[in-house]
Image (cartoon, rainbow, N blue to C red; front, side, top):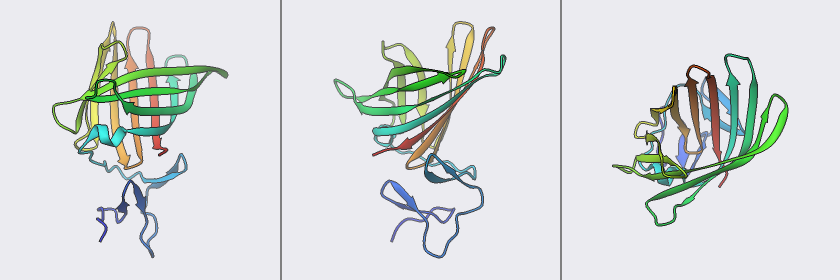
Length: 186
């Protein structure tokens, strides 16, 4: 017997399926070619590094709320083993289009083992602290002060194959909203 969730969907390994004779629940949305329940439920993650490991398709919108400027990033994020163990190396690469001008973009982060399997310590590639991450409940908010700016990230796990981050960046010269959807590729 497969475990049922409160919304009637069933988990089969890393995939969700809809049982026969059922319609998708109200609020279900189509995003990035996959179904997910947009009803405000979070998907608890008992082991964050295990959950993140592998390749993810990435779509990010970037909005400058002060100027009205907008852009988008599309690409891939790969979470692979970190040299020396104890975490994952996050490598993101793709194309960022800002105001209609495309350019290659990439970034690298380190996700280190936290105080429990559901927690990680996220660092920049040079080792500087970025933020903590606790997906025990499938939802987490983290702050990262950077000079006079404050980056506030909201992490939401929507299913075994889909998670989202929403970063709000505020400061004397910044008022940005960055929304990123990740969909599992492997």
